Amino acid sequence: MIQLPEKATRPTMYFIGVTTTQSSIMKTFPIWAEALGIDAVIKGIDLPVHAPTEDYRAVVEFIKNDSLSMGALVTTHKIDIYNAAKDLFEVVGGYAEQFGEMSSIYKDGDKLCCDARDPITCGMAMEEFVPANYWKEHPQAGVFIMGAGGSCISMCSYYMRNSGHGNDPAKIVVANRSLPRLRECEKINNDFYPDTIPAEYHLTPEPGQNDKVMAKMGAGSLVINATGLGKDRPGSPLTDKAVFPMDALVWELNYRGERLFMHQAEAQEQSRGVTVIDGWMYFIYGWTQVIADVFHTEIIGERLKMCAELARGAQGKKEYAERRERKIL
Image (cartoon, rainbow, N blue to C red; front, side, top):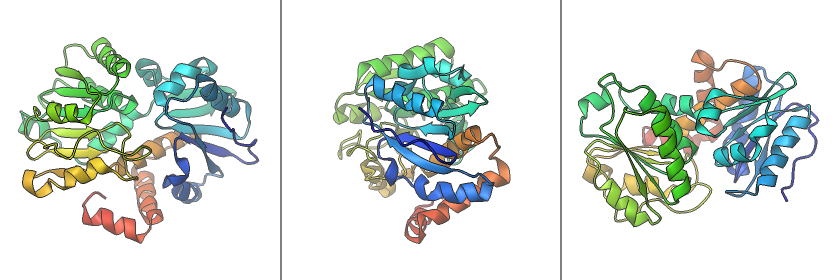
């Protein structure tokens, strides 16, 4: 049974994840809170991947019933916690209901609310590094997403709901090591976005199978690690023998951890013209927009830029220098 936090003694936001104490948000949130005029603290709630249903329900019930528990950001468990506890929410947002996941838990008066912010924030992050007319200028390039969880569903939504203007990927290819998540992603895409961007779905229990799927992607394709491997769990969805598409954009959603996938891609920067981006801006956008939900404020424009700069400083000089060297700030 999960060890729940003690009853909050001051306004508290929670981070529901797997290894929350290792996250940069623990250093960054207090700095953001002060700058944004938010009187609150942050605490982590760690759960194993695919935790028991009763544990997810216990976490949601704790937040719901504790007056000073203001809300939470959910990562890794977005689909599982939705399936386990959606009936405990008085308000379920449109994206949460559509995609069967939640990343944002917040309160509106006496109502407990949830929504999925990834369909918005993943697009914001991708627009940081994918040029405006990229797909029009790279007609053979597609999107290859490894991992069929909440982030993958959000990325598919971003491209499919914005399609039809002559600037779309040639195809979207999703690979996952288990069938249920893969089929759920396929069903959501077919139900909500039929006849948009061609899509393929591959069951790939072994990394070598992802190598083979990636080998069929066109030059300039966007290759994404959305598995979580390399952060909370070791490893990569690819083998060291994998060959990235020429001139590929490679997005490692993790911004911390061993990030073996990212290092595999970096090894081909010269030979294959690969451009590697990590999950730092995804982290920034994801957190700021959920904080905005929880504390009923807006974090856009100059306030968003301020948060990004403060987060860079909170990382420390060494990490900041490494990011600047790799041109991913």
